[in-house]
Image 1: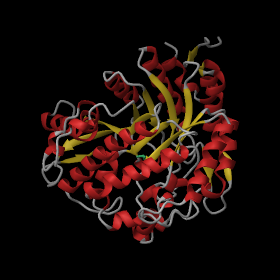
Image 2 (image 1 turned 120 degrees about the vertical axis):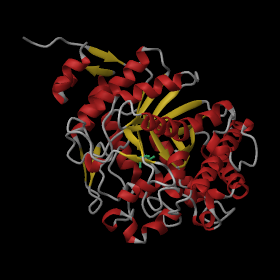
Image 3 (image 1 turned 90 degrees about the vertical axis):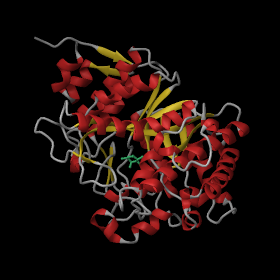
Image 4 (image 1 turned 45 degrees about the vertical axis):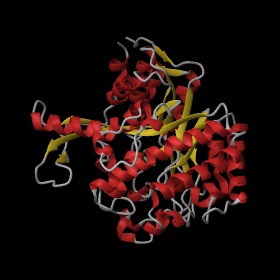
Length: 448
Ligand code: FCB
């Protein structure tokens, strides 16, 4: 008996995109703190470094052509501060021209750019002087940089993402003790950096609007789904709630309500009132669920994470995370209360063999479709990532791309998931034929 047919259609103007970041794809970004950090091989898996990355500085256009092959109508990319302002106060017009050319190339291909203004990297001159630890240093300089960018590129872009993941930047650089530069482990410095990024976001929001009336300004907010490791265990539940409030909610409370979270309030130089209402949209970067437990031996943070997962849990390559598609729907439902447009600004997984990605993509898009059916205003989905790229401390081993790339030869090959994404975009949604062809095991779950 043949299976029934169905189609889960998305709105006609839905943005079907992918996401990248400058340092991960451009190559030879020699002037920022990450490049320096990579020079010490022990810090990056397998002694890798970004090197030529995906060669986008010279030829992003070849990948933009591949985006056309897949039918994408949106792409999120970032501009590299250290290229545009290589020395303090000196702006490089050739670098701005190169970004103009990239944005124009996207536009000419019918792909709407979303431009991120800060994605983990700082010019070395800024980092040397303390980077994001000093609000008086960084906020005015970030604003001047943003103003330069919006003036130079504003005719080609009006969808701006100020800062990528302030919580991840702060935690990885200032709490993890070595996963990202500057490799610090200090709770109050972490909070200070996160707070300064939120202040800088709000200031940049005003700069963008002063220079471009119709600017649409948001942030890419990384949200992790924390759940107690031992269901019903009160201390685990407490830890999960505390993490949720510090890591996920504090950013929203600051930018939507103008309120500092307890952790951010300590030592805060000023009230957060000025931050209120500085989002035109919310970007959700969603990857995975974390099961956490109270752990009194962890002196700074008091929690540990589940490292060995039960057999029935689907894990990505290198245990990067558990595959938990419902998380997207739950977070969108949570964000919808703020009545702002929502973009899924990142979602993806490391999967070299592409044996998990097809089902992952269908399930996460299905959850997104469910959110839209519930009248939540989700405007677009940007898969991380278009092409395998330099995955920070993980180096080249984690393969996030719809397109596979060998960093030694620059050779590229579309993964099967790329064709799946193309077929979904072409059909305007997820159809039974597509599920049958790419992930038949999901059929029953989706047909209900
Ligand atoms: C996100 C980052 C992005 C990439 C993905 C895998 O947290 O924004 O640059 O590293 O994770």
